[in-house]
Length: 171
Image 1 (tube, rainbow, N blue to C red):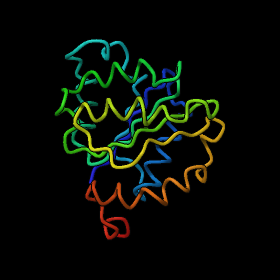
Image 2 (tube, rainbow, N blue to C red):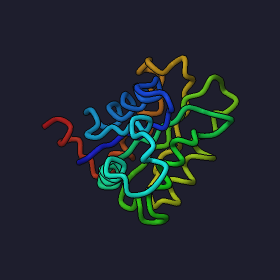
Image 3 (tube, one colour):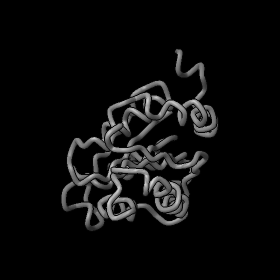
């Protein structure tokens, strides 16, 4: 089982990254195998063929589960995340990958953004999205209990579809 986190916050080592890693860990019981902090990829993410970006894309595409996270910018996910997601082939780039859309925002106004805006692009890339997107207030980014209801409700489904077995978590 391979688990990845992708975060599209322009700030390196952001609250979004910390919250996404926490969510992935809570969903699976283990730290993610791959963490792609897109802000660290540099200008290579703006084109095609950069070896570092290609390696990041391959790590995500070969994962069983990926948490895709962004801060809320202008009521949607960041342009930086969009530029990274453009590296994946339409329909097949994330085929076989279970994706969890996740966004942080300042208030409840944009609570549907992960579901209405981030989920469709992940599905367009071929990902399987079995749970609704999660939105947390950025003031709760470091509170692991903020996602308790989501994890309790959706972790079993996410694990089942991603092929993560309970015995895998206790072994």
